[in-house]
Image 1: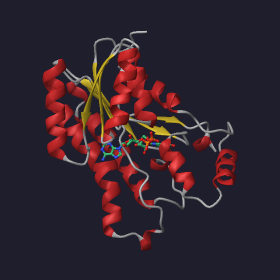
Image 2 (image 1 turned 45 degrees about the horizontal axis):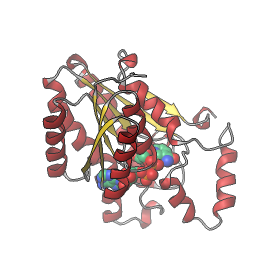
Image 3 (image 1 turned 180 degrees about the horizontal axis):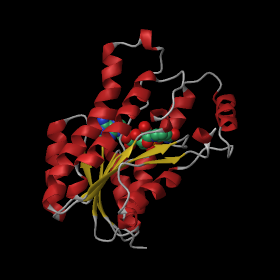
Image 4 (image 1 turned 135 degrees about the horizontal axis):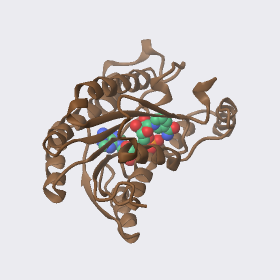
Length: 255
Ligand SMILES: NC(=O)c1ccc[n+]([C@@H]2O[C@H](COP(=O)([O-])OP(=O)(O)OC[C@H]3O[C@@H](n4cnc5c(N)ncnc54)[C@H](O)[C@@H]3O)[C@@H](O)[C@H]2O)c1
């Protein structure tokens, strides 16, 4: 209990999946949580759930690819709670799954705008506040697909690889300012994103079995498996950790 007591956290893409689990867990451990997303109803449901358990949270509509929105929402969170201690750059999309030579520039840019530029924009505006209030912790959702290649989703690989190194560069740049940056690399996690990706495949049940066979623990993870890693990186328990990558993948990349 109280592992992030009285800290102020912004979680992007917090309406569902890993972001939602993270917002709920941070609030349970004492943080005031800005639930941000483009899904209004689901975002407000996350807030209601936090409130019903005695936690403190509010919802802001935020498309992470739009700098004017990022600037405005972060200013409002700062005005409401007086600081920003934690930023979880979670919002992301799977994007187009085609071979590289068939991908249009627009399809490529759509993935980059959210998965990479969105992380940059939110990071940029959080740093401004963290510099004035003595530091903070920024946790970036990369992926195992930001560590290793696969034959699918080329823009997603590129975007998540960029997030991994953006994290390390910023860790060095802002170490003296007490702002820590770490990336999280989930393996296959059962969320709406995963469900939607499977639905697009011809035989989803067989595909799920196939994927699970590739994972040493032989099953997918759940959003809480990732949220607990984020909680650790958000808390002062990880105060000596910056520029690191936390892989949570049931052993997938150990092979
Ligand atoms: N599920 C997995 O297996 C897995 C594995 C590795 C990494 N990840 C990463 O974890 C993060 C969360 O994934 P998830 O599986 O929970 O996905 P999800 O689709 O279930 O949830 C993503 C959330 O991001 C929001 N979002 C999408 N575009 C947005 C935008 N432009 N601005 C703000 N919010 C936006 C969505 O509305 C949604 O609430 C993503 O960055 C994803 O790439 C997921």
